[in-house]
Image 1 (cartoon, rainbow, N blue to C red):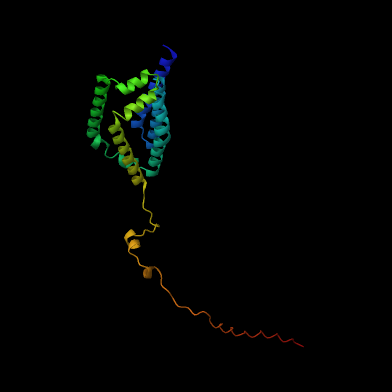
Image 2 (cartoon, helix red, strand yellow):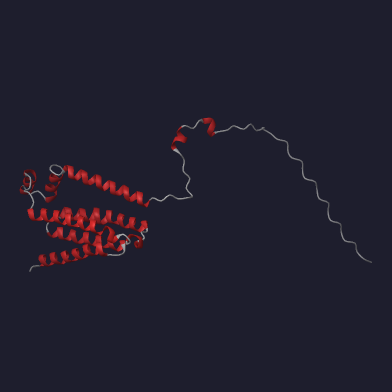
Length: 217
């Protein structure tokens, strides 16, 4: 076994362990940290497979931005784990069914193999181009609609995360937009006529000085 194969098995074992801990960790913050570890090991495996662009995108986008955002969201939500565990066995059959369906779909894709590379991407690879160029040709020609759908799903997830962390403060004052639009000038300003000069008020009366104490002979 050469060095490359050894690194592949090492990264794969750490990846499987981190993925298992993501779904078994009791603390959601620990689960997010294990997910970041899994993404880092997956990027290392992609580097071994000479998919440099995918590895860099995984580190910069998911590991550096998305997962940090997830971590902050989980920390700001302040989840009550006791209340979340109450309905575990109630929803377990549905969750198990969804897991089995996803596993069957992945097995069908992996065992069925991948289709041949389109002619444009294959020509880019054979003419000395990089895998980044071939990947760009695939994304913006054959897989354009799936990329756009994935972008919409990510935007919806980001909006949902912001909505979950948005809490209404009691000391915040809100103004109705319709009231601002239909307001008139006389409602905003009220002119009060004030005299230019006023007579000075009379001085207060002087207090009498205290009498001096008498001296005894």
